[in-house]
Length: 247
Figure 1: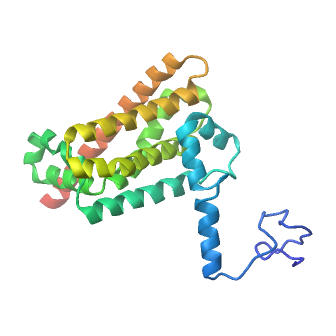
Figure 2: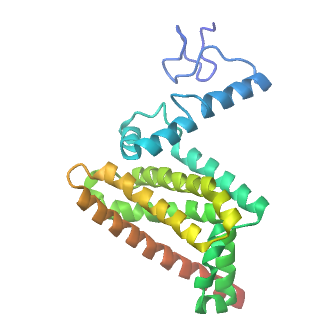
Figure 3: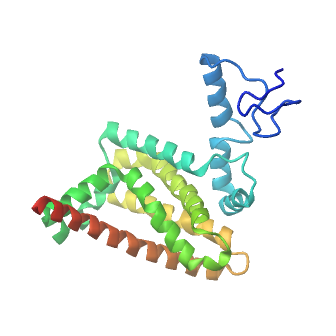
């Protein structure tokens, strides 16, 4: 056992550094190390991504509250969580070339007649998981405005929104085979409805200790405000493309 931490050069006398927390027993990076890290971070029963998913399924509000209050060692980090799931969903859509979001193409009317709007729509449909990542700040800002009295700051609402959107992407991943073999707009609508209901469930657990009815109302308000933010941002992007290409 070394008496100097290899990470921060602090004198150590135990299994972990008292300054940075790194283990005093570090092994050379090889295939065994990589396999062990994957097993530890992904398949560990009391921590890692599967543990986080289980918690976000069974007790999402309480789990997120614990993370925000400081109980974090067992939870998968929110931004890594959503990036991993978003990447998986993106690969699935890319390789199978079937985008559930395209089922809503019939909703395009006047906007579809505009080439620039069509360009934005097509890009959004083809990169929906990344679009959901871009929407997180809008969800967080709207929630911060509506639930400001909760005491959470904007960055903490980014964490909350990241976990919620991550689970919504997981729902899209798990239900993708159903859509792939049915190609039904009704299936997609049910999937999206389930995603929104999950959002409500998290917020009811997180903010509904005093009144779940009040939590439902505020959640609806925050989702409406975030939708308005997203619509405004989409129009700005569209008009920005028009302006750039017209010069």
